[in-house]
Length: 474
Image (tube, rainbow, N blue to C red; front, side, top):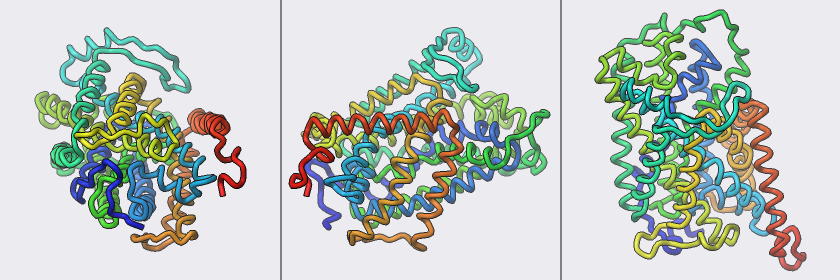
């Protein structure tokens, strides 16, 4: 297997540091800053730290899965190729890879769109007057379901988020080597935000503040169910540690670069996010965290350094969201292109820009979907994102590793302690999936069912498996 050759029209211009920067900039974004109060809402008190740590064990084990698959099959589209090759190109692999593309057209833009939603949310802390103006001109189109607003939100801050998304698309319309350099700049910026929070919060950490439980008399959710919901939120924050796998066809020395960058990214963010959680919860009492959940970081800095610090960190957080959306759109834009090249998606998206050597039509598709989902509520985005992705991507890839090994496919990088990381990942993903709630479990299953129906109709119209004659699929 030639793991170093270029795919037609693409350029291998990403090294280890660029790959790691692409991963981490997508991970940080809004992530931890938006979800600390959400996790405390379902798992109040010191137990909330378990959500970050247990979810961290899960993503480190899952990183080994991504590393082994990425080193063996370093192609544009990542999981698309892993599922196609492992389950069989002529039969079940077609179905599994199609369902992956089907759900990634929902979950990928949902993930990136949530960054634009968070940027809009954070921007309200610029000034009380702007917050009041935004709230006075907000229109909600939807309904409350189980305490969550499901629907579209139109407001001045959401228009600001749309403008950010448009600027991201403009920046991404260039060669991948220059995109790698931009990602390094973004990495420095997002690490500066986290560094500032840690430098201000950790020296002021108070154990009594951290150990305090829920401030009212409401009984906390049972630890098991609360941990599942909290892990789901933490996983949302960790999403992106594998992002460079979607750019596998544009990575230099992928056998070494992909596993190292994925593991480095996951280990780094587990440590950093756990410390950020400690910095917040050891300084601000729980009741204040829950009251300021929309702009916790601004409240944190305002308490410690004054109004100027709250406004400055807000600007930095918006920039962090921008960097995250940049990296996420970059990665997911390669998936429709990869499927189109194999004939498993609309051929129109199998196009590479003649100058920039990027899949520009696929980029515009994903970018347009990101802009659409940025108009919806953040709670809905997070829950739907986790539920729709776990089965078809993360759990399926556990079996993909085993199938590729059984087939004798060369695995140039092999995970340590095999098969223990597979078992931990499988049990962990099932636990998180159960914790998303029945509504979003049904949404995830419904998404896959519709995808199955579309696949069957499409295959029948083309005469492909499972409707092809036996000699045509042998």
